Image (tube, rainbow, N blue to C red; front, side, top):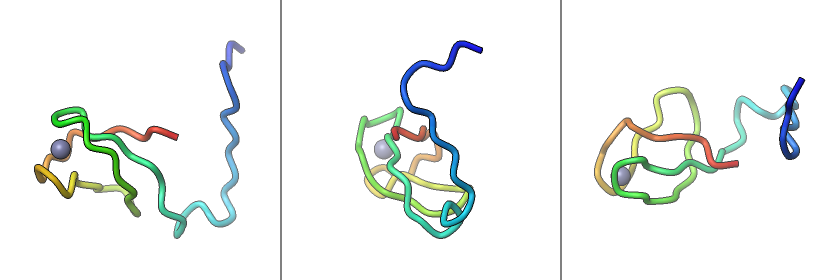
Amino acid sequence: MCSVGDSFDIELEDKLAPKNYMCKDCKNKFKGIGKNVKCPSCQSGNVAESG
Ligand SMILES: [Zn+2]
């Protein structure tokens, strides 16, 4: 309904392609693969996809 921006969901190479994440704790930006992504800087699991 109200999709802002370009939320493009491609499920072909999505499983192995690294995604951009941002740590909510230390604001570190990094790339991660998989479901349980941890921040390489502070080892926090409190991360969010950032694109
Ligand atoms: Zn962090």
